Image (cartoon, rainbow, N blue to C red):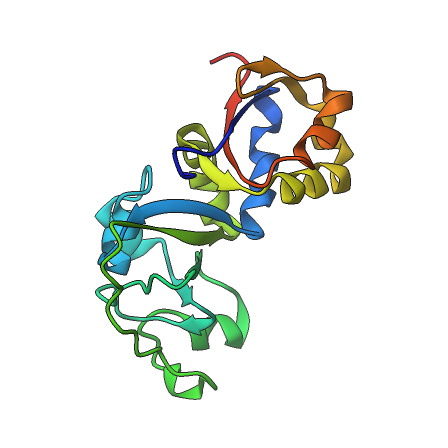
Length: 200
């Protein structure tokens, strides 16, 4: 989730539309986690990411742009970006799949990552794609993720249909009308974003 001192934005949306908001996860959200953690430890702390799910559902992992096979690799603390997806189609999907027999065809090999520094916490930019986003995005949003205000404003501007599906928005305890939401988001550098169905 976002750092605890970030302003919070809780959005309620029509139940049928919450899956469509998972598109936001493709551009990345910030997840605060403990430093000195492995990739497996980080994933295991995400809601719904059981050991079985991580092993069998997550087929492709990119850490700072390089494909990763080893879940024990430590996550560096220098603004890491982690992208995960289920199986991708075609030859590219086969090449970048974890522990693939075609891994030798990668132009970039698995990264050699130094252990993180001594900071107690760090932010990981997490990107979820395809079925991973669809299956786990709702639980992730319910727990809370870090976003930038301008980034969320741009997303809602680019997806006006989704903006219309917001039934309520509360920014740091104050109700915000949909017509004012984008303008107010532009003023917030970072936010803890929570998205829930309006019947919860």
